Each structure stands twice: as C-alpha cells, then as structure tokens.
Image (cartoon, rainbow, N blue to C red; front, side, top):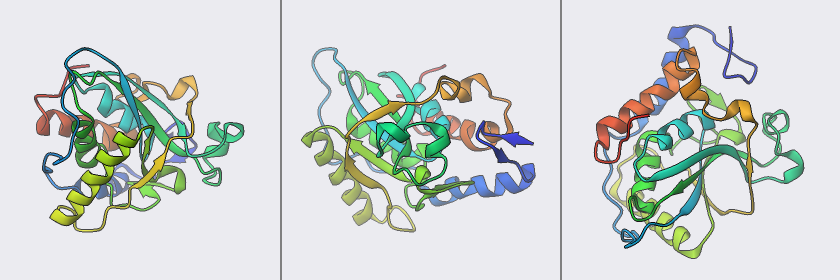
Length: 223
C-alpha cells in the first residue's frame, strides 16, 4: 500500500506503529517552561518561525491546533529555490528540510510556548536525520530563525533542556538562520486534516495532535 503521498510503502500496520513509537518513547511527558521568553504582546500582531521536525504533515497538523497560531504552512527551508520541489527534496541531497512556517499572534502565544510544543509533542528532537519511520536529512530537526531574538530564545531553551536532562539522548536540533522558505505543493497542505484515515496519518500524526490536547489544554483549539 503506497502512503504518505511520497512513494513510501507501509510494511504492516504493526511494523509502522512500532517505528512510530520512537517518537513517544523518547520524548518526555512534559517539559519545563522556557526560562527565557518574550512576554505576551500588548496588542495583536503577527510573527513567524520556521520549524522542521520530520514529515511536515504532522508538524503542520499540530500547529494548526494551537491557539494564537494564525497559519501553519508546509514547505521547505535550508536549500535553494531551484531544488525546492518535492521530487528533489525527497532525494535528501538538496539541503532542504521539510518545514512548517508557523505564523502566530504574539499577543496570544509566545515563541517560548511554541518551542515547548515543538520539542514536546510535535516531534522527537533527539533523532538525527530521521523522524519515526522517515529517514533522510530532509527529515532532520531544525529551527530556522529570522531575528536575533528568535535565535536567543531558541538557543536558551535548547540549553535549558539539555542541562535539565529531560531527554535520554542529546538534542539534535539544528539552529540556523532562515535564508528562505518555499511553500510546498498544494497537495501537501492540510494533508493530515484532509486524510485522517490514511494509515500513516493515523499512526504517526494524529497521536501528536492528541498529545497537544492532553499536554497543552490551555493552548489547544479544536479544528
């Protein structure tokens, strides 16, 4: 059975479920709040951060369900415009990571809260060049920052988590400046919401949204 819309093949439901468990078993149930964070803005506004944590379907689904997030768009970051197409990115040789541009209202949710969700339920930050059943540099964990403040907050939180030993293995998340974000093809957008019965989505992505609702009830919003 071909799934993931990307030429991937399910071995068996049990086998894929076992691989998917790599996400939940490595990530702790809860993380500390960031010691360094931007305060909630006094007025409504708009800011964005680009996050990579494996297949963008699941990361997009998580952040679409976060209060204060105005838009979550699947795309590519880390490579050039000439290779920002799935056929190229899928080779793992273009430098891109499957990413999600999270646009949010800083008067409703802080960058630190977004990062806490990213590290706790959106993906497993200890996996290197893979995420669950997906393998390759295009599935690496990364934060692409666009300002000195974003870099400072992300760097501080990663150091805080490392020193707190909340993960069994070191955090492998790349922290890099955002040179450009390229929106993915239309068929990749809102994929988890449009295909909840897809075995890949059911096993790998919907549990992340359920974890968001459980761990962050004050930030969870119904689809």
